[in-house]
Length: 204
Image 1: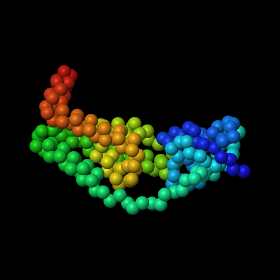
Image 2: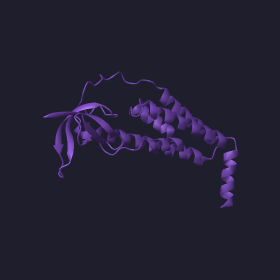
Image 3: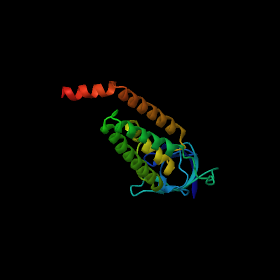
Image 4: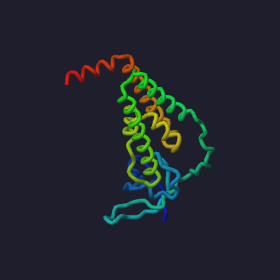
């Protein structure tokens, strides 16, 4: 027997939430692995049908969950825009050029390269977790990697892995971190940041 309800509490980073039955009653636990169509992820407030099951402790949980009134969108054409690739490569080349010219410490270029690699790997792990219904990397962590200088790697991951590239709220915060990181680099390049770093090192 199938039941109908609404997803009222969904934690996408953890891959689970709850369904409130239409007729009232106790909320039903639902995991991302319980959805029949794994290509579509809930965002919250969707109406679904499900089979009522119980776990080993007798707690209700949903199985064979299906969305009501939603169909999988046909796959669109692949994103062929090369702008993200060009922007990331141009920025890293710019940092490398400033380093070779002696206008930036080599450590700065190293930070960007390492942070970009870490960010790319973090996106790849999060993409894999999203597909397999495993523990997700918090969006705040991905933004922190970008803010710390890993945004070129994050941008490459968004383009190549097609991950987090269409979520508008995520993209807004991501580009804010890019601007903030650029401002920090400009401040450092102006000499104020370098002088502050030398002062800190001299004080120690």
